[in-house]
Amino acid sequence: MRFKSYILFVFLLALPLAQYGMAQESERPDYGVLYTAWIKAGDPVATVRVRLTRHPEWVNWMKFNADPERYTDFKGTGSIEVTDDGVQWEPPKENAYLQFRVNLESRRSSGRFDGLVTDDWAIFRADDLIPPARTSMEDGTQSRAKLQLHLPKGWSVATPFPRYTSGRFRIDNPDRLFDRPTGWIVMGDIGTRTGTIGDTRVTVAAPKDQNMRRMDMLAFLRWTLPTLQELFPQFPERLLIVGAGDPMWRGALSAPDSLYVHSDRPLLSENATSTLLHETVHVAMGARGAPGADWIVEGLAEYYSLEALHRSGTISDKRFAKAHADLVEWGKSSGPLDAERSSGPITAKAVGVLREIDAEIRESSDGERSLDDVVRQLSDEDKPITNKRFRELAMAAAGGNLRSMPAFTEK
Image (cartoon, rainbow, N blue to C red):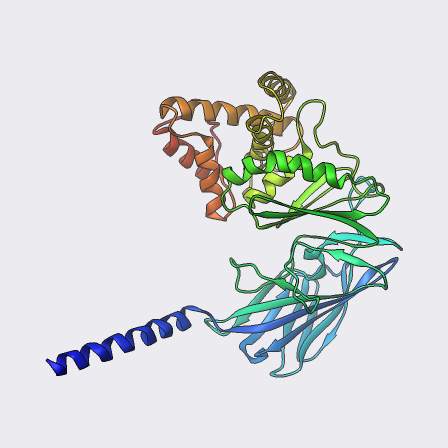
């Protein structure tokens, strides 16, 4: 009896240790990456350094997809090979760093900017600081990255990243083994307003004297965002909204955990649509369309921005119906839905198609399912949306074929 008790005691003592060992094995060992950027007032060209601060020996090489018209003057330690489409870096076993210069100014075909550095402020994508990269690293490892920004005296900054007490920012994408900063950044002489809506910390930041209605935006989102949070349970914990007036681009663009909107864009247009909510749906979904499926991504963003306005009571039933009728009319001048890019009439037509699909799903399922179930599944899958996959999920929700589903030849 004593022997059995002893065996049981040893087993119980060993069990937590074994579980601890399993937990340790399930966590990938990490190597350190520190991104450092030096920004100068009025100068669009920044200096950036990528340093491997811990276990550089675990990284065999990094290949950066760097446009030579934007990224120049590569230097550092180890082997550096510059090609027409980027640079390959083989870091040394110690003191491993790669340094380069990057032009943060970005001008669209309209002549306006979606990346700009002035004497008083700057707005740009963090994606532009560090070009996309492929890495070869030791099996079972991952990066743990931080970003450090050196700014002109008196400048402050707003980013979508959590900030350490040291002033550095944590860069963490759980879906990737190599982390690089993405999302919008605004810095300089800026004004910031922050509020918590549900589980999301919302920050609206813009240069001063740019007519950015920070408090209006927070109030508008406090009314409408809970609807999107309910629809998308994975809605980000942080949402940064940046903007400015001319000469910035007079539109809006989403990015991970953040979006840009021109300060002159109304929160709610006369046709009862909202550019701000459209881009917020993009942030919530985090989705992109495969070739020929951009109508789905853009259509869903417009469809659910209207749904958020209606379900929250921001617009009436009558105004909601009128908004859809206007979109149907606009969509009559549309080209094919599966065009490479969806905008204007194509997106308007897409909203009408999505509304018909939603009605069919609700009818065939006796109201138990809707387009909501389809869009949640698409968002959870975290891969490009295809016409084929959208059709599969919509038919599964309906329990059969859908008369309103467009037929495409997969590209």
